[in-house]
Amino acid sequence: MHGLHALAYYSNPTFAVTPETIEIEVREILRESRVRNRQDGLTGALFFDHRYFLQVLEGDRTALSATLGRVWRNPLHENLVIIGMEPISERAFGEWSLGYLNPDATSASIVNEFAGGGPFEPSRLSTVSTVQMITKLVENAKLAA
Ligand SMILES: Cc1cc2nc3c(=O)[nH]c(=O)nc-3n(C[C@H](O)[C@H](O)[C@H](O)COP(=O)(O)O)c2cc1C
Image 1 (cartoon, rainbow, N blue to C red):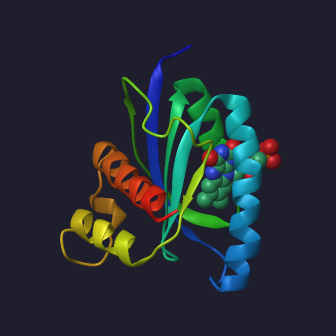
Image 2: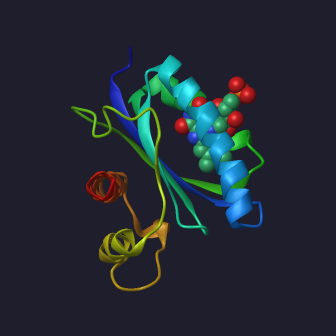
């Protein structure tokens, strides 16, 4: 064990985003990721605003690094930028092997809050603010569910 860490990154989809490709490509990403994350003891959430994937994963640092290698090689996205990997004292996404967050009206206002008024630009986020933003989005999704 190398201790509990949170990893955050963002990337751009390589596929043309339509309701059909979201249904096919994103569903497949989630299906295989959830199986792997359960095996690897990882939890997290994926936000996709149709321009950016923004993902937080938490778990053992070694497992996170191995997963990142596989994520990096996946041709469904590109321009992957690591926001950071930080030690954490407890999990924020304890029940979710990989929650999926769709954009909606409330999530847009949460994203706006973190974007500082301008268009959402994940390059402005730190690991901690990414975890905070995704946690808020998860709470919003739970309320909406
Ligand atoms: C945006 C995105 C997020 C992903 N998230 C994860 C993840 O959380 N865990 C994971 O194991 N794989 C994730 N993957 C899938 C990996 O790229 C890879 O396809 C999967 O881990 C299976 O790898 P394997 O074929 O080498 O077993 C993600 C892929 C993309 C494009």
